Amino acid sequence: MIKKYVYNEKEYSNSWEVRQAIDKAENTAFGPEPTGEYEEKKAFWEQFDVTYTEEPEPEPTPEEIAAQELEEAKKQRAEQVAAIKVDVDGMLFDGDETSQSRMARALEVASITGMKSTVWVLADNTVATVTVEQMQKALSQAMLQMGKLWTIPYEADPDTLEVSLANVGI
Image 1 (cartoon, one colour):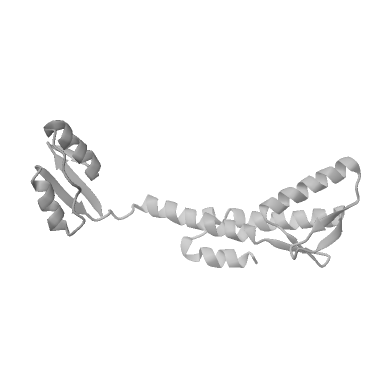
Image 2 (cartoon, helix red, strand yellow; image 1 turned 45 degrees about the vertical axis):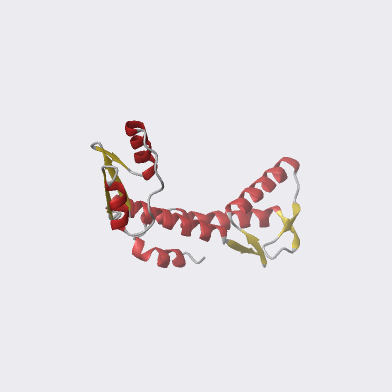
């Protein structure tokens, strides 16, 4: 509900602003606005020469609806990306963005140092020795799954978005 207050031909959007205007113009202080029914509030404000109205919230514009749908699609995408898991040689790796970043750093260090394997915590919280090749596969698979998800909010029909996400296999 949108509340409007008109005092001295000026519109105010909340009671505090109109109270300040009345106090400035008339040096008048008074109690709070009633919390009851519309008619009670209207009568209260009339004693101060304020026209009080309540209007329903406007319907969202097509642009606002589209923006809300895009935000919801992005939220769904984030949830799907956070749930990415990839299987490499029977080991299940987390494939979310943070895990991808960690894998990329581990591979970079392996490249610099010549390491052939490292100890890694898998998706089920078990510790395993993982080779560079296995880590590369895990990172590649996770990035490919994320890539499939990433553009869906911009391409999909909102009515089929959940189906599209499910079709990715996540």
